[in-house]
Image (cartoon, rainbow, N blue to C red):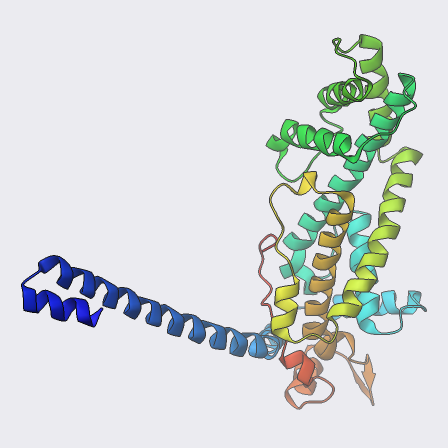
Length: 343
């Protein structure tokens, strides 16, 4: 690059000078970006290491101003007393959040207010998997009704899920097959015909059968819906347990890298991919929530000597380091909770 400039000056060649200057500017720009990215990585690490202490101080300030969290403490203690198997407080919280996702609970304690939108989104993701299982069941039943005894390829299910997802895409994340069970039933019959090699238009009796089956599978009041949900819930619990065990001792950066972003089109993911994704979200929310609230609230006793737990005692105990000083692992945690959807 310098030689190009030198030769350009010596030979009075403007093109050579310009080429040399462009090369130099590109090199300088690259060096500047490398330095910037390095600084960002360092700042990010410092930020995630200080997040827990910052959040705890912020929440303690709100408690000192009168924010009522005694109800949240009672909620957690009730869970703990009712659960004799989980052992640690983190596992009690993990189980509670998993149940909230599976059974679509809408009431959460005040300490989970910043995680409300995230939890609602994860609930809808799980509901989408239940509806996909209902759609799969309806396709199987329809093929039996048509007399098909052959093997159903995974591709047939995937193509059906993709078409149905496009059909109900105007509903955002809700994926409510119940409201559009007629058009969904039509897609199921079309998929069944494709498997059978039937090129005719869908018959009315086949459409009626598929819609009836879909109506039973998608109705939360019907046993078949409960069976589908229970099956997915068992698989989800196992994956959540594995995920919590895997992330419990991770550093902040490792934890943030492990949380794989949700890819577009959640409703067309395979069942296993969907469950893994939900398990990652639940475990991440639970781990973050516990590291923040465990030391300053959930692990605090109701009675200390002659004093009863209240807003003042929470703040005083935390500021004096009585049972609320963040551990080394706590100080290294990584994501500030935001009142948004999944990031």
